[in-house]
Each structure stands twice: as C-alpha cells, then as structure tokens.
Length: 219
Image (cartoon, rainbow, N blue to C red; front, side, top):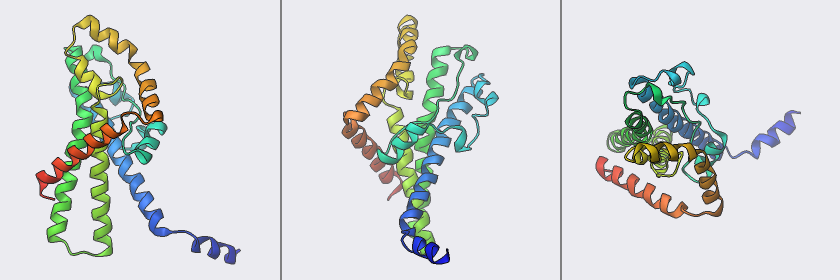
C-alpha cells in the first residue's frame, strides 16, 4: 500500500496543483465580492431580500453557479448565482436596479485596484522569497480575474449587469418588457460562448481595462 501511495504522489506535479488551488481561491473571492456587493447595495436601498437569504456573505459557496464558475476557469470571465432583488422595495425601481447592478462590477474593479496597489508595494519593498513570489502571483491573478468578471458583467446583454444599467434609461413600458425577456439572454450568452463569437472583443476590452489599472498603480 505504501509503495502504491509513494508512486502515486511521485507522479503529482505539486506546482501545478498549487497553481490550480490558488486560481480556485481567486475565482471564489472575485465571485463572492461581486455578488455580496449586489446584495449590500440592494439592502442599502431598502431591499432586505438578499439579506434574508444570507447572500450578503463573502462565503463563496452561497454564490457559486457551476456553469459560470467553469467559464471563469476556462475563458477568464463568467458569472455567479444571481442575488435575489425585489425592486418593489426601491423608491425608484429602475434606478434602484441600476445602482444594485452597477455595484457588482464596481466592486470587482475596486478589488483589483486594491490588490494591484499591494502588488506594487511588494514589488518595491518586499524581498523576493518563494512565499512572497507565490503571494504576488496570487494577488496579481486575482486582480486580473476580478477585472475580467467586472468587465464581462458590464456587457449590455440580459441578464448581465450592464443591461440593467442601460435599460434604466428606457421608458417604463420598454424597460419592463425587456426585463421580462431577460431570462432568454442567458441562452444567447451561452450560444455566443459555444461558437466563440464575441470572445475576442471581451478579452480585448478586459485587457484594456487591466492595463489601465496597471498604469494607474504604476506597474
């Protein structure tokens, strides 16, 4: 038995395994911050629905959508389980939905900015060791994935956050009609992902935003 276990462990590339685990942690953090921010924004605007369903938590297991998680791993952008929002609690339903939607991507950009500032500090003031290099890599990767999640969700295709912001400028009749059909938007997104359409545009946009943040922090 011990001989078998020794052979098994000798075949494992622990460097790649550690890299995978760190990427999992990075994805979970980005998704949790994004969705919790939706819930906090809705709660601040008067909607207790997300709080009642324990969606203000940073526990990633409360927010994970399996398909969106796989997209984050293999494509670099994806989504989480939508936070429940009841717009009837908002004084202005359309603007309340827009602000709640915008909170998710905005939180991802803020998270990325904070992590990149930490990376900049480490690059100039922290000695390079195996641990600090691994930590720097984790923070940098998390920042990149966070930008990817925020950028992807700003695309104005329902049910992504960008559509809720854009639709808020429409007349009420058009707004509520489009919101009714948002459930079909996910099918469109999946179809586009399957055929590879739009991926180059999203990646280019994501890289542009990330480079802008790198320039801002001086990296």
